[in-house]
Length: 399
View (cartoon, rainbow, N blue to C red):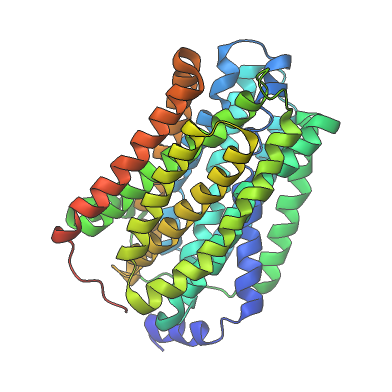
């Protein structure tokens, strides 16, 4: 049986139970990138100074590095083995963060947490490969709903644990969660053989070639990088904004905004279904428009109700666009899905790192109005690139 035949046979057996398990594993993995955001004010009290503000940036840069160096391995070897190994390394990295004696050590540990948390991006293309083509958008939507839940509920969990127990305890809690996910994936995932026989160096070189040769991949990456940058702007600054005398709210309340934003989870399967039936382009443009609207709400309705409504709109828009852009990317070349995902999500998290760093600068020099202007500009860039680049896009195949 050929590799394509093997994949089709496995895809026919991808049921809702395995899809849900993969969604949970993705959420648990990606949550580790965001635990530090609602904890930032608590961490700064233990490690005073500007350096602590760059812990989220370090985590996202580590994630970007892991995407480039680790995720392409999924096209070269058994994805199941990679997923198990990365969850174990993630547990070790979280323990290192929990024990960090200095802010410098914590920044290094955060880089390692980010790199190992890219196990989430081993699982997403695996799910796309296992799914039947006509259900790929729906499957990606379900798995990406798990990712969004991980992003948003991580803040709720971290805010609560940080307020009532301490920021170190949050990272200690991450250790058994990662090990449980490793055991679950070991029990449920099928073994997987690579599509291509490539060396590691050749695989990394092909990542750059994919970027050069696929204009649709470039546009999808740039659009989603800008959207994720403005998403990171909001979540990086939220806890600091809520600590201002105007609100006088703590990290636990900042974390509760994750529960509110989880309404955006509904966007993932909905966007996947629309992308399967009518194509992803409309969903992407609508998502970018919603993100821009959210920043107008944040800027002109600077109150708790305004923040609540704005975060629902923001998360719904970003998640819709993300699922639809991944639908586009995974249709380009089935034999290179991990490397395509490397390009796409590396760009996304570089955007996130730029958003976090730029948000801290905007907050320092211009306060909340500066943050809103920066976030709104990034959303407008995403919308302009999506609309302006459509005439150069080649038709997407359903494969």
